Length: 306
Ligand SMILES: NC(=O)c1ccc[n+]([C@@H]2O[C@H](COP(=O)([O-])OP(=O)(O)OC[C@H]3O[C@@H](n4cnc5c(N)ncnc54)[C@H](OP(=O)(O)O)[C@@H]3O)[C@@H](O)[C@H]2O)c1
View 1: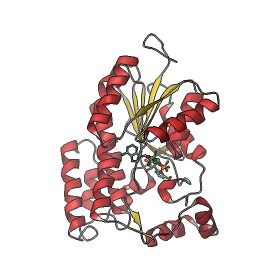
View 2: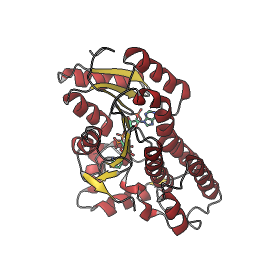
View 3: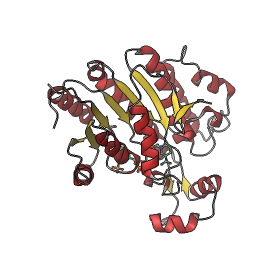
């Protein structure tokens, strides 16, 4: 296990207990990085570390982290400070899908695979839409987790990232975070203008979205139609990535779309394996020094935010 005198890279992955996050932990550890696998649930996190240890990856440690809990974030920052004195890589991966199932359907992997065979991506997304609903509470939780959770973890760990020579942040965004899903041209332009956009303005926009959502006016006010809170949260996370990257040229700050991956967040409706999705995220975390910053990666290359 690494200590403060070691030169190996240290990474934190949020939501590391399953899905893409677990794969990112595995791939980073396989590349020789010391991984702090975090999860909000102690048991699920410890079991995930055991899985990786069972694969011969001994440089993985567990630490509890609920990204919506300030004291949990502070405890992680203290552990990193006392144990390593720095952080090289932060992967903001944890997220909530922003909706709840309608009725009480079974979304076991077997059931989903059976129902979804023969459907293309659009049909699978439509199947999810028909079986789910967004409420004001799910919308609030979605913004709190997917946008503010990632932002608060990043802010708390910033001094540690700055203490390493090549600190980097990888925000796991989504194709659903592309600006094409936003109906209002004005909003699109604001979110696509990192030179003038500020974090305060992003707060105002997110508050306006929730107000419009509560009034049943999200779509007419130019916000995305379906899965609207998830799309707004991811578009905001991508915009924050660009704003934050400009403010911190000493770091590499990028976001990545892992692709449509078969995990619990989409009721196992995706096409790619977690290994494939995780490799797209790990590749951005492991980009050569002095690489791009403020960029979005999709399909293994830089992509448009629109
Ligand atoms: N799968 C896809 O097709 C796809 C496509 C585009 C983007 N993404 C993004 O990829 C990332 C990983 O998602 P996934 O597909 O691997 O989904 P997943 O298997 O459902 O994993 C989500 C992870 O986030 C954790 N999490 C949720 N809320 C949390 C909180 N408050 N604090 C800490 N951890 C929390 C979950 O923990 P629990 O186990 O405790 O719930 C879980 O570990 C997400 O950012 C997602 O938006 C996925």
